[in-house]
Image (cartoon, each protein chain N blue to C red):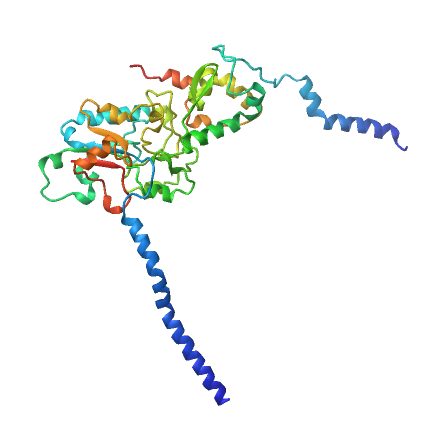
Length: 133
Length: 264
């Protein structure tokens, strides 16, 4: 091989540069995988298993929305002996009362912009402005 | 050559005759179809099954502006409707207005003092033939088949405001600004809306599902001025009152078949 002394160090530098994001991320602390927490109320059960919810909660929310709103099947779900009216505010956020930890931590990490809260009231707003009478 | 021209002229004449008589044939065929369409348009209710409706007995509400305000307040509180001043930006699901505005086609000269001076409770009529549903390009406004409620899916509304043009009752309001910061208190069980969507009365579909009455009905319960029920059920309370009393509807001549009735 001609110019072995230049080509091999050149290749090494090239590979290092191309793989920069991978090894930089491995040692950097700029972003950490969100740490999940169970609901503060101590509820252990959800409408589906944790893996299923993690993968398909958005599908479930859409199905609930269409069923409750468009088909007018305003039925409840029973989880752990307690009835919840299907809906983001009336079911999910009843246990997962911390939106920052439950929703935002993962959505921010994965750069997902949800528009739920354009209309739906966050537990914080609901609690702060809850009418007293 | 001459002979050919002769045949051509004959043929042309025959074609012209056929062309002239064609509309007659088409018209003859069209008549039965049009007749049946007319029968359906002016006949009885077309939709079967449950059809929820409201009867407002104004005799119990004359001079009781406090009750009208109470109904509005109750409705707007449970549905997170903000209070915005000004005709352009205000959001209203149920409100009070003068007779001449509520019953445009039925206002007369020399109306009685009580008619002239009273205010009437108006809201979405949940029509059997709703123009807002016909014009909605995204089907954000639709008829709930189970109940006959003209409902809205705010997830789908793109804010084009065709429905506001379509509705002859002005029952729809547009969110010109984000309503959430304007809410002083909220009902945590119901969502708010966002900037750029249209909203209106939903006949308290969410309360009915829980076995509650609509908020306005509950608010004026002390005088029993509003009766809510199934218009297609001959044994319902509302039907019994409708059978007994003379009632009017807002702009019935438009053929929208409102589900809100008035005793004035």
